Length: 108
Image (cartoon, rainbow, N blue to C red; front, side, top):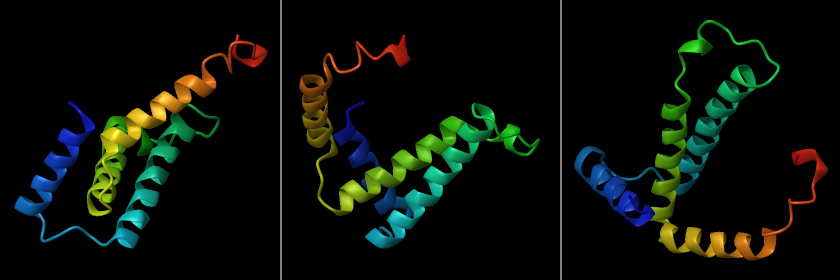
């Protein structure tokens, strides 16, 4: 599914099930909270911190989807065409970083 289709799907959901979008500052705070939840799972499951039994039940995919949902909300309410922005970013990264990491001995 293309990002613009996801943006439309989120907008339709907000209009059908929500009252309205939270304002941009509230959504930014929510995004920070959701990214923190992802960080907690990653730090405990893949990092050096001990994973508590309550953390083992956390679903990384669900938390990443929460991040995506809020990003899509922010894109919608700030009139960002996320598909266009993503495609432009990939073109920049492809041109700029094509050979950048090939000689990095830390990655081999």
